Length: 206
Image (cartoon, rainbow, N blue to C red; front, side, top):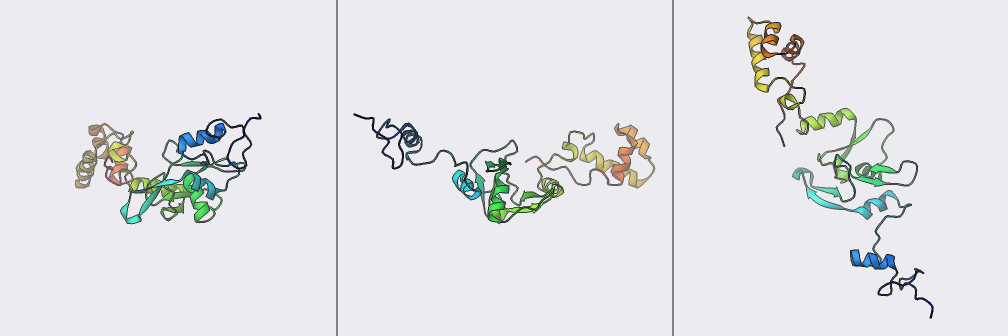
């Protein structure tokens, strides 16, 4: 008697368990459905890849509505990754979402920014084009960077900075004298008193 083939229509592999081949039986064990795909086709479009991996609805900033958090692989910064056919194999998921649901991204140093400040989000309503400098401003405005006294190179606290500015503005003390007292270079004092450094208070830890 010849070996039976898989009972799934169009599959000619040898039957293994429950009338299914090993591949379809494994899908059934893992997902409860022998037809559920476990990997996206190499020739899948961006839309198919985004739909295959899926997302979870999360509220991060209520005024913006739901974030669509990428359920696939992410990089060290929390941004989702997907793949695509062609020479450039890997693509950030939120860039793929922008391309597919909003439009093409111009050539050059153009990034896709998150209005929700949530790296894995792929909700097109939360995505906007910008430049690297916009991202830096976003990080500072949204308290994501360690600035001021929390920065690794900081030598003075916010209180000391405020005291230096007050004392210098009142007169009677030089920048060199303040530098010697606080243990920094006088150029540092000069930039502080002219508000070229430490323009904003230290961001709180979040």
